[in-house]
Length: 111
Length: 115
Image 1 (tube, rainbow over the protein chains, first blue to last red):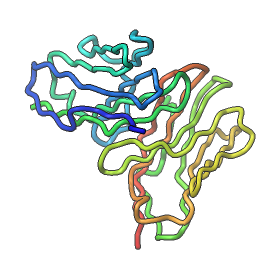
Image 2 (image 1 turned 180 degrees about the horizontal axis):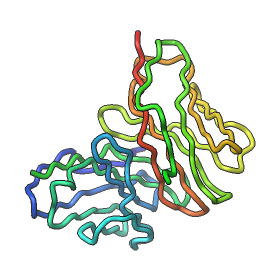
Image 3 (image 1 turned 120 degrees about the horizontal axis):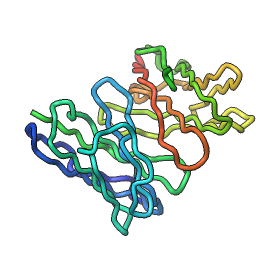
Image 4 (image 1 turned 60 degrees about the horizontal axis):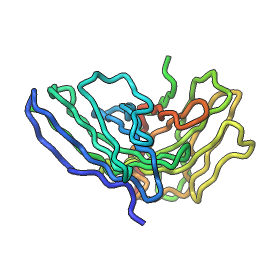
């Protein structure tokens, strides 16, 4: 039974560029949440997708957007990258209100 | 106010000894859940243990137990018989209310197990 997978593992971009991160949930899970973890901090909630709709959103600007596909996989898009967007981006999946299980993360570096 | 407070930035423990990682939380909800996750240097957050606010018994999962003191709003993680592989960051997190609400994390505690 595959766990949560994320791609790519690492990514280097320059300021102003756009990036897309991908997440496949654990088998049987229908909800995907995205978190940003800056160096030395705990993860911060970005948004959550369920039934292909954004259900909840944290305190992140509109530059951060997402999508959920019919197979429950999800993408996180960040436009107009800033240096401060450099972080580990974690995807978590869950079945309805059950425990969230995390993927290995995508480490984004913005130069 | 911080929702989750972890006051120990770093902890050291001897192999085979037990260690307690502190976590206090702040919520006005009657229904909430408390979680502990382990994050090795690879970055993946590994779920360890869960305690619901209405659970009367402290949660246990193998070598992990959660010392839940509701009146004091604390949810400390106890790791028994520490192993070298337990060296990692440990995060306490809370989910408030009912439904699939987002997790709010503390700043974490770095645990180092010494041989």
